[in-house]
Image (cartoon, rainbow, N blue to C red; front, side):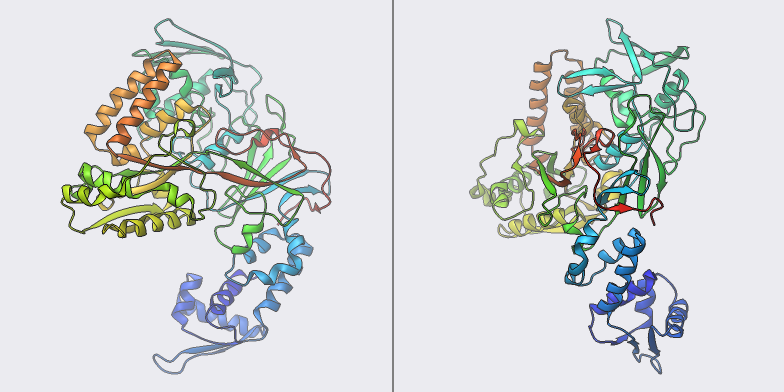
Length: 590
């Protein structure tokens, strides 16, 4: 299939449904990301294949014309049928994302749906195929601070130990045992002797040391966790001792995070050719898809699934009816799919930029924004998967606050607000754009001008939020299963908004409070300290918590063994298929 041809046709179809279409060559060059010379050459090639007639405009400024041989709907359906027959999944996914009528796919929608979710190949390989609604950012554990990417890292790697959220305890993993000195400055770990990397070598203590030193680098998201390391000693191949320059009871919890994935010392890290010890290994990664295959030599139980495919699909209304997306999905057409809902997956919040001068620095203005954002009203206005109203980082601690909009006029007067523009940033995610528009419209009712600024997902997640151009920003946070560790990371991670937007004096006060929390041995007292920290942030309106979203997925009823992953996803290494699905696919997918 010629994707450039169908991209052109879909774009022109939005202009007119007629077979004869006026166009400008430079616009076509923009669609194809090429020069006008190359665009003209492409059109001549299509003409030689009798796909269209190209009539160049005569003279400067005259519009050119294209006359197509067939209606676009006929061509799309023809290619769809050919692609279905060949199991050319990539071509089908491409067509589903084009801005063309959804109704064109209705006659073969069942066949298309069968290409998602569960698959069984001719040689009985079991495959799970899913959709990711954006391009992946980085899978480098030194840089990853996004839940989806962190989840993937847990599927292709392992950590020294793991945190069991239900039992609130550390459990063995690569390290089968450990001990710590009474003052929490000396930690010794004893490693299993059966752990193989994906390239076949056995893991040893030098690999653990290599990983810790790499994670300690100043540009790492984990550097704040490891800054107290004074020395690392490999007693033998399977024993390693870590010496700290000050007591840190929380140190072992840091080692459970996805960012501490153990990497081999003898291979230069390449996130497109990931080598670690995890239950799955990467066999292909590009902008179109990520393909994982079970690692047969995994030191624990081999995954029951043979392959998992994540296909990138950023646009396309047709895809809202496809199961197995790793975002919210509405899927009711196929009774074989069961909707799973999970409440309180993270928290959406607003963080003020306290580096900038101007009215947003005034406490009264921040409180005015707090009073006008009444999430109870928002929740009643049909926001998809809005979840529950937040007043704390954790859902179980949140109580729906009572807002007092009558105070807003006096607060704005106190802040000496004169109607000037205040820059309100958000990501380009459709849900975020919808919610930010609601907030901007709500602010306008009280005479506050919030000007929208779009921050890319990569900028928002990887320390590139333009502080000089942003007064406040809305973001979402999905924590790991270790709640305390998640909260510490939320406020310490250099790539997340609090560390980026809060000024040094606020961060210094925050650091003192967080250090006290980390040193406290009593879980109940740590919980009280967390509540006080959150109160400090919210009473000053440095942070405004909005809501705890609801996560929804539609899963085939034959998918079994589902256990929630720390990030709200399900652990792929535990999944199995109850019976053989009806649909078989070829072993060599396209």
